[in-house]
Image (cartoon, rainbow, N blue to C red; front, side):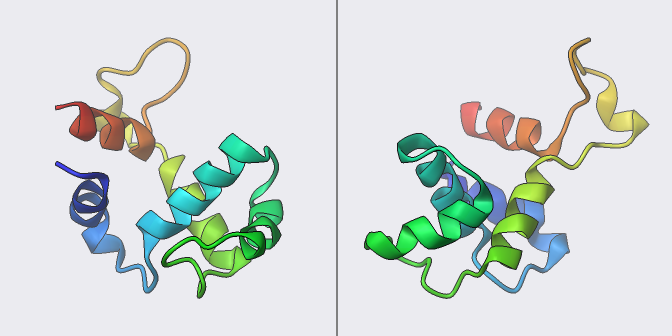
Length: 98
């Protein structure tokens, strides 16, 4: 399954009014090529043609990245490692791996 489909399925109840996949893509791409904050990614993108990121503002970048770090409740921590709690990012990675 592709990342766009995984994100759409896992986040459908959140009802984001922007393209979360594009926001995450932009932020991760920025961190790979020019490490920095989400704020820096908002300015960095203007130097490149990246499909689908034109309408994303800083607030949306923050919201997209924050949802990746949201921790699951106690029931979702059954398989957590001793290094940290399970988050939405873990579920996305597991779905992509499967």
